[in-house]
Image (cartoon, helix red, strand yellow):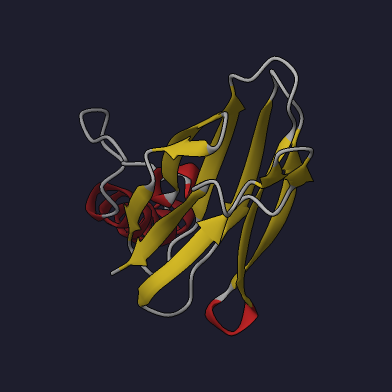
Length: 137
């Protein structure tokens, strides 16, 4: 009898702790957002001497994933943003007819030029108008 009298209060404490923990069958837990949820995804079509779109707007401090989709059949291009102090130090080759994905996180707000730095038989791609602007807000 002494054993039952000492175990009963312990069981009541355990039961009340379990009931107040929210562990009932009807309660659901929300999972935290995945890291991919904050990634800003942008697709750019890379054509002969052009980027489409040529203006990209993104939020600062959040990762940006650019998919650069080349639709040219012969001429390779590249994508360059040269501002390391802003977290924008990107220089990637884009083979003709292929997709290239690049990820970066802009650290400062402002307008930053991007361009193709390739030079071909017909001159500089940049001089032919292959440029655009990244606007970080």
